[in-house]
Image (cartoon, rainbow, N blue to C red; front, side, top):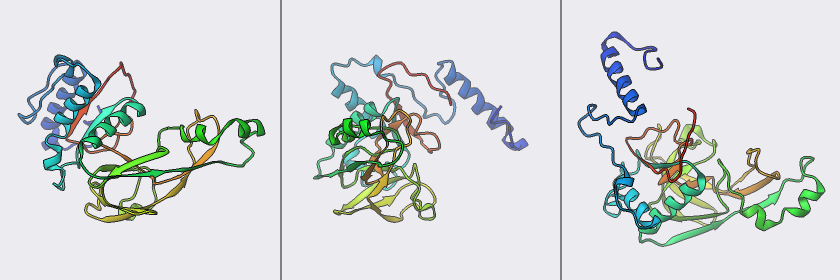
Length: 251
């Protein structure tokens, strides 16, 4: 129904074929009649002995020959691994970044309680710095950010839409500084634009966070993998799904 809206007569046949393909995917059927190159590979058909081997297989299918191809401009642009939760995404990202034999740079955030009427005195006493550092939620970079030159990252805030610095933009790290990180925009209307990413004060809006606090950190995260929800709105041509546990989502 969605694909039938606003289509011309000349596009109707192609739209109907694509709709039929989506239904085949929905019912678990292999659809290989779109461009002759589609392929579905289930890792459960491969003998897996450890989680590291699983991540190696994911890296092989999603980013083949990553060391040889990462210098290509469009290699990372439309590739990703989708996983259901942030902790799984972090594991996959850390594994793929460890493959890249380059010097790493560590950035730590500065976390502090927001002194407002929403925080009771008892909460302020219970929430120590270690607790704040361990909070990890959607839309907020972690306390520890580790990057390498050439690593793929994703922007998490809307600060300069005219230059492509908005939520969901994917970039490649070029240089490190103490207060800024130089990146090259890979997606959107500003492909190739060089951006200097500063630290920002960010307050999570997630209702599950027990206390209102702010984190001063770079508004980017490593993005070889992303959550399924975060992938909405992205244009991707090579996608691997890593479902380590059952997942059901709407949308």
